[in-house]
Length: 263
Image 1 (cartoon, one colour):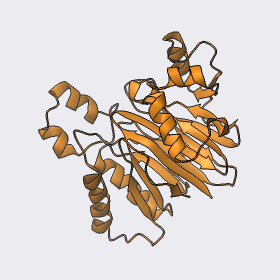
Image 2 (tube, one colour):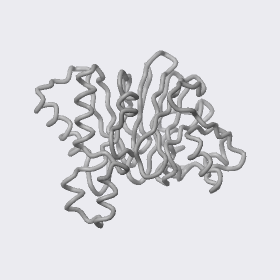
Image 3 (cartoon, helix red, strand yellow):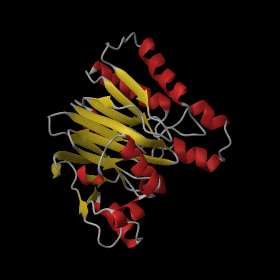
Image 4 (spheres, helix red, strand yellow):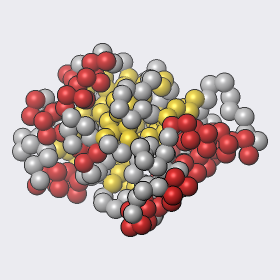
């Protein structure tokens, strides 16, 4: 059985784990090396069993911890060529880092895993990942996207687990403290995904047979875990969809390790 969890997930930092047996992948590292290592220790994971780090994009809440971590541990880093070049040029990735650019629309070997990268709509080059585990399971992770493009729809289809951004509640965002320009950026097609947009996609995926979901990258100012989950279940109720007993929808924790989801 494969497993997914977040070491931390939210506007202040993101790092996820995809595991099968002893081997695992990390997705992003947006908090300190110390915080990341503490999360791995809590899960009983050795750094030496990590097959690599998948990077989604250059924003600090996804790469802040990489520099110190990679000075301590020699792990390969995978991502889009433009993102890796930017991280190398700005010395976020140390010069000696084994930075491996992935191509789009094909599955490539990353240690014991098969990884397919797909573009997401954000205000810098950004990608999500569809991952095939050694035991034949498939999951996808997509955060930092303002709209669900055809490429994202295709990547999420047929997965056993989907980790999808549920960043903000529209009412909280529009009535909250953020200035107009920032609210506009978040709501735009190159910003972030709302609870309503995420819930509509989960409804479609549940109807298609997927039953494990992680709600990721919840805003501290414009969302709550309870509100994100309530939006999902209100959407299902309105559509007369009753999830089966195997269905799990979990909001990932902002500053601590989330419960493990098996898929």
